[in-house]
Image: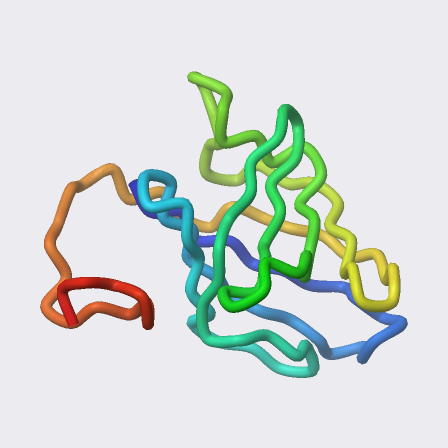
Length: 120
């Protein structure tokens, strides 16, 4: 399952800051699809806790952004249209997340996105 998340309203960083990220629920990884004003690597690791999903740096595991209320452990969620608050960990700036799309299809990618992916 891949989930498309829109991160926005990090006004303390940049009033136009946003990012579109795909979260791969099974691989516990995320990839940056589009962004402006937010310093994000191209991909990273997902840490899951009850009621929280954390986007982390792929190399040292440093927390980048916390998605409060975005719970990948729930059987009934997340769902399209769901929203919640996000916290940028570098400067504690607050913003929002919004689930834009959920892809339940299991599809093999033509090209791997993650640097540590064995299929590259």
